[in-house]
Length: 102
Image (cartoon, rainbow, N blue to C red; front, side, top):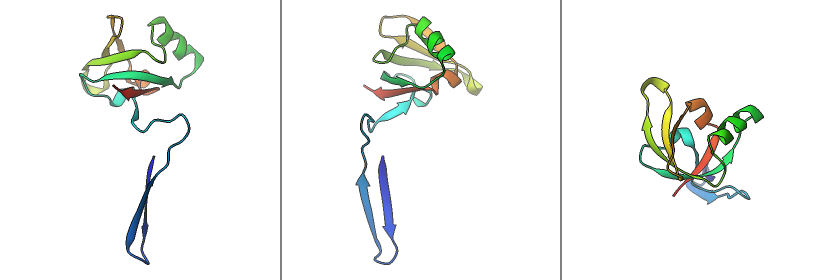
């Protein structure tokens, strides 16, 4: 997290970086990744039912994915798993997965 503070009295800007334990600077959610980018799954923030659905697709933290396509008008996102399988996820599910670009 980068915080920038502006001191109006002295007219200067102070910027500093706050790194939380276990949080990476380039961590994003899967729904925001562009086509062709490879990512590593850091964390899945969802309820038990959604985690079981993702587990049944073979999606676990530490796995590598590549975004291969995006549907128009908020449709699913297609991906390729590191083991060679292709699948699609709803954007609502992809928004629960935190990833890091490789």
